[in-house]
Image (cartoon, rainbow, N blue to C red; front, side):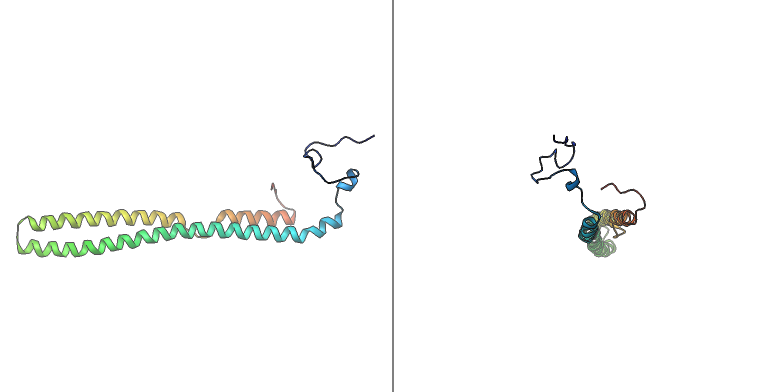
Length: 153
């Protein structure tokens, strides 16, 4: 007479391995200890990959913010020269030529301010570059390895 197979195990999933009985399905302590280095190596490799992915994402975000800062600096540089041209035209004549130069300078300055604020928000979003999710995951893994805390993976 065969023993009933429990649900939720390899038997229920239609595992093709031949098991003589439930005793054979359980691994010995020595087999589990033998698998431990492989499991720890895999865990460390996966944690490093997660850390790499999160760091690359944060550095990319900070890089975009820095690029926007550079764009703001370029527009501020152009605005400075337009303000200089405005002062020259304003002194030379009191006609609308300086007013048009002033309008261009104000426009460039507004663009520089907007790019600067966007760059600041991107840099803040990318900082600190250390990924807290990966560090928390590593701490949980260390605690689980020590047998402390809760490990649900």
